[in-house]
Image (cartoon, rainbow over all chains, first blue to last red; front, side):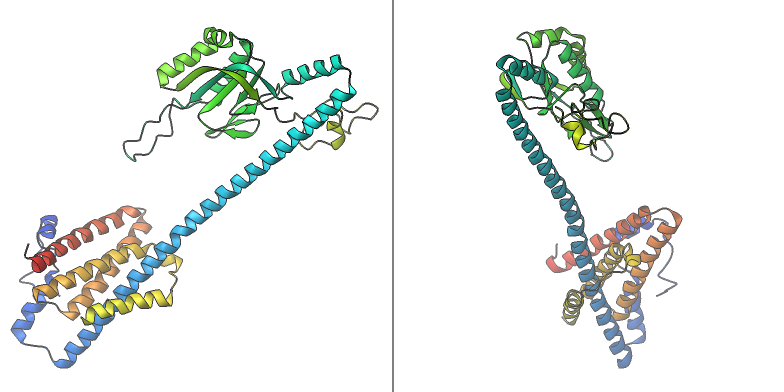
Length: 299
Length: 110
């Protein structure tokens, strides 16, 4: 390979590389051949065989690499698709259960309405609606809040993670409290009704309403008196949201809507109530979500 | 002609045998492919220049693959990681481009 006269270390390696990319070895070998005359036949033949073998190796390498890439790709997507479909299945399952709970609740309500005298039933219905335990409908407003478009990172071209205009759990809490303050009677976020004990919390980048994730854009629907929107606009939280929208480019749209229907909230855990005539469960009021069956029978 | 047949034979072998790449060798695979591509294009150009030499081809192929693998290995061990492989890809890529340009000049006189 070495040819001391032809090979010298060129300081400008890159320029050389661009100008003449061919291995100098080929030229050197050709020169050598010209000087010494043709090689013996056995040497040529073995060289030929080695060349062919390495070409076979190259082809083999290409095929292996291609198969490797093709095999790796579906592996990743398959795992992801599996997880996604599992999440969807579970969500559909919860939705089904929710629907069934609502049907059962409606049946219970009907039975109760038949059993009770008219006045008491109406009063109970009103109380349940106020507590978020019954489906309600009426006029109100829908406030749509969405994250500000994220700046893109100039380095990676991906959206930056520290978007100051992202809607946070605290913003939604303030919005909901402002609406209660303005006289709203029932509020739902993305179709998820809020009861008196509902939580709006952050888990990483996601916002959970009663432990169920909601995503931007957030539609906060509220049923209330006719001047709800004016009252909300005048309230401190309403003004705060205007300021947020101005300062951080957060999307806030307030629109009135007639005939809103908000579903019932998820069943609250009864912590202190227990059926009449029975002793309360051992260990005082149950605190976890795993309530004893009798604890929820006294409603 | 024989070379093309050999290349096809190699690809067929790879497809038919369905070899699995051991985990330890997987990081070297892409770099080895680029090195092999460089050797192949260098060989084609030499053939068109009329100075092709089987021995040179074998040596350039093996040394390309070995050096590329060594650089990846060193990069891994020294904590430089992918950056060294990027260097390999850039240099070999430039060579491939140059060789393809020479091949093009030979084939199309342009």
